[in-house]
Length: 244
Image (cartoon, rainbow, N blue to C red; front, top):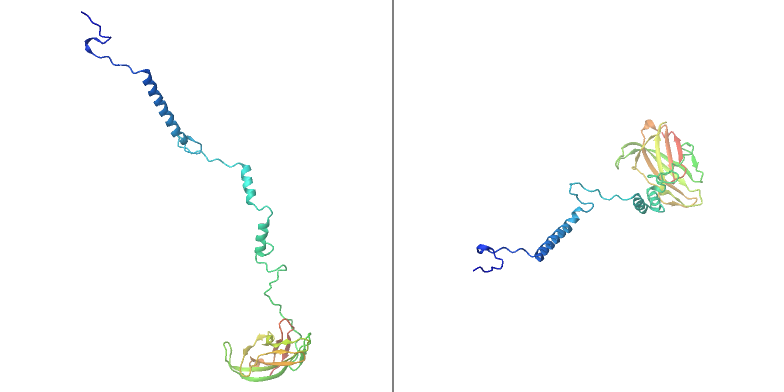
């Protein structure tokens, strides 16, 4: 007697069941979602400016001429005041090393003009009214007591200055120099014996003296020039002659 087996295969084997359409749809959706996530994750690596798959580098964006011009304009002073300040710091007119508007060096002191030489026994009156004379000329044996001095024959001069101006005259700035011969070779200075510097302030009409010594051998005393500058910037009184 044959009975139905509800479609089961003969021989007792159980037939495999096919996946339902719902399962297939779920799996397909999962795969699609995985692919989409992968694409999203990998997308930044393909953006502009990064390395491309071929290994080349995409150049960075270049600023437009308009943008560069704007940046340059912002960095440049609009009124030029900074450049002017720099020129002032360099010397007032943009030229380094310029001492003044006329190019003169303010540290240079003008040399006092010399008056015409007078004989050693004369009294000389300067243009401002001051008079100078060699009150005494002596021959002494000089003594070296300071660096640079040389002992030996010397001439000691007593120089007298009379203030013929209407203002006080400060003698502390008076300077006396001596020279020998036609070429005016400088004579060495000495302090002893008997040297006395100019000191004090002369009121109008008053006189003051200073005693100076110079190393001058006997053979050189026939032509000696003595220059007296009694105040800075004034005329230099000059005596020239035989001091033997």
